[in-house]
Image (cartoon, rainbow, N blue to C red; front, side):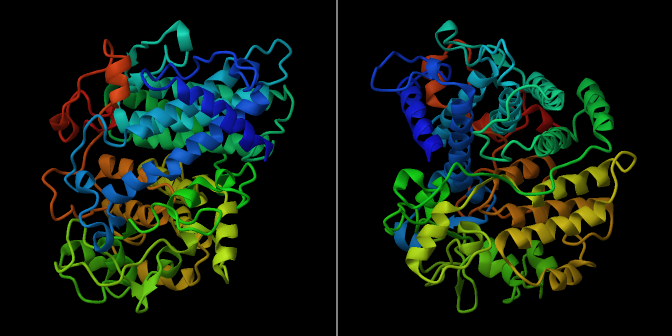
Length: 525
């Protein structure tokens, strides 16, 4: 657990200086009782970035995306009227502002690896991995917020007020970083990173992951026009025939139930503390009625159009994703209170497939141990296969096997959750437009996004939010109290308006819900 201890030490220092601008994270004074970040090598810094960014991805970013994409709801049986701001949605400069602040801190660790003085090329592979991980989380931030500090960012005291770069330029720079990372890994230079908590020094897997991230970047640009479309098409052509990741991309520095700090952060946030006490958020996030109807196969015949393609198709993953009540998933209609429609007396919570994976505990203590030690999922094999299916659908001259990748993605999701019955499920959906690989290309695109939404529930749901913003799929009902549509972006956090006021764009609540110059560039068309 040395990595976790070092991670905590470095993060505790950087957090002290993160209260204002996003680039004050590395403003660190010498303290003989703590590790100075300037004295830490890439071997220690690399897992710092990986664990800290995953922690935020798995906690409040997971919550935001799960609620906005209507896979979970607030437990109004216990909390009265939870998630009002999410349901409206009421987006402000304090709405999930920890996502920005925390991901910037994690990326700062990757940047410190990338810029580390290395005259003997000892840390070439570390730098390559850091570039790949930086690109992963920079994309998430850019997709959530649009333009952001990038080219002048992460310089500490040298620049406390970095300018904002255009999303288009950040995308190009990140893809260039991924290309360069592949070149570095292929060079054979540098020591094998002993602190690689993802692929444990397997450069081929890192290259495949980098290719998959490039594919995600390029597919996000599927609707752009002009120069960016030409750039996209050039990069897609170069990616044709590349190897993509064919396994879950998991990080694990040695998670365990030894103490709260060593648990998987998802577990510590949503499930149990190391002692076996329920986590603070154990009861607030529950299954939504929307997810319940879909996973149960619409058994009560809900007549809303969105549910008709699910009629009679019981999803074999349901018991692994959410606990069953009376033999089925029981969910809350977002926005409603006890006594109103869609608020049953007993509610389903996250089940073992989401909280553990493929295992099944036989006692509460074993549950705590297994969930605490669970690896964190940076990207699932299912997502990689869905990306490849979409690439084959949109660009058949460059990519192939759309149907095969689609089926493999669903199978990978079943395996991830430890569910059985995938063959029956694939047979049941094969002729259902918008759910199986059949019909028009528009039907198949809807099927990809719908199935990806199911597969990423509780795992990496932010990717489904970006897919919805780009494609309009999957169709998900708004909360009953909604006064706005789903947002196209978030507003920059208060920390930026305090610490970087001369550069941060002034985004209004109205700007979040309309297509304008502040919308992420790939979502403006």
